[in-house]
Length: 273
Image: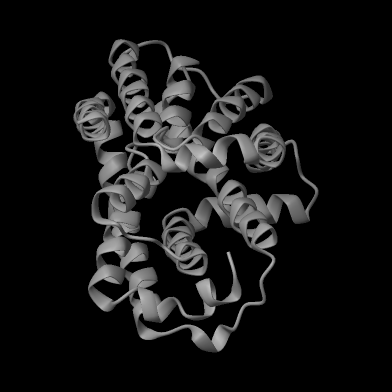
C-alpha cells in the first residue's frame, strides 16, 4: 500500500462502482451474510480492487447508520459512564461491551498476518460462508426457549465468538447474534449487544489498517464518488438494520442460512472450476 493507493482513490473508483459498493457494504455489513466475504467474491469475480481509504469511508457510512439506529442506547450508555454508574442496566451494558471487545482486539493484533492471506482465497471464503449458514440455521431450534438477560460471562463468550468474524466469510452479526441466542439471551438484547459491540471493533480495525498502511492521508483527495458511496452505505445500512430486526423478531433469523449456503457453494465452484 502506498500513498497513491489512497490519494488517487477517485481515479480507480468511478461513480457506478462507488454506488454499487456502497449498496453491497450497506447490505452485507449488518445482515448476517459477511461483508468481507462479499468483498473478496466481488474482487475475484469482477476484478475490483477497493482502495483502503475508500473501504474505510464505506465502513464510516455503515457506522453512521449504526449510530443513527441506536443513538438512544448509545446516549444512555455514555451518560452512565460519565456518572461512573456501572450498576445500572446502561452502565453494565457499557462494561459488557468493553469485556466483549477484548478478544477481537487481541486476535486482530496478534493474528493479522495469518488472517490477511485468506482474503485472497475464494475457497476460504466459500467454506466460511457455509459455516456461517450452518450456525444461523441452528438458531431455529432455539425459538421459544426460556430467555435470560445478558451478563459479563455471556458478554465475554459473545466477544470470543466475534473474534472469528475476522475470517472473511464469517458474518460478525450472524455469529454474535446466534451465540447470544445459543446462550438463551432474549432477542432484543442479543440484537442490541451484537451491534453495539461492533462499534469498537470497526473503529479499532479501521485505525489499525491505517496504521499498518503507514501512509499520509490527503483529505483533499476525497471526491464526490467517495462521498456518494459512503452516503449510500449509510442509507442502505440503516434500512438493513430495520429489516434484520423485523426478521429476528419474527424468529426467522435462520432464513439467512440458505443464502449463505448458496453463495458459499457458488464461491467454491467458481474457485475450483
